[in-house]
Length: 116
Image (cartoon, rainbow, N blue to C red; front, side):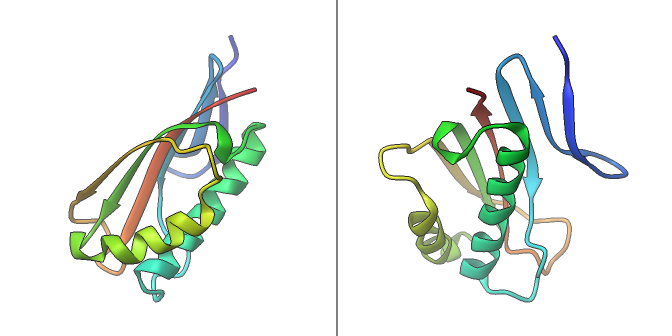
């Protein structure tokens, strides 16, 4: 089976597709000046683009991990998440608090999706 590496950067691939699955690297906002809700929306748009490049979409997400720099910002993250989530296609999800590499980042999201 072929391994496809998408959106390759110096240290990582934005996504890797293999064996009917797509693994997303941790995605962070392009604009770190946004608030938590804005960063989340930015990240979810990036995830849409990566999934499309892989040949799938958010309705095929199996599992998602959301990392918040401050867990009290979960309601703001959830506002963007709820607008983005496809009705009837909720993935398994975990939300945790952890320090992120850049203190300006408020949110990082990773996940696994099925290919059609």
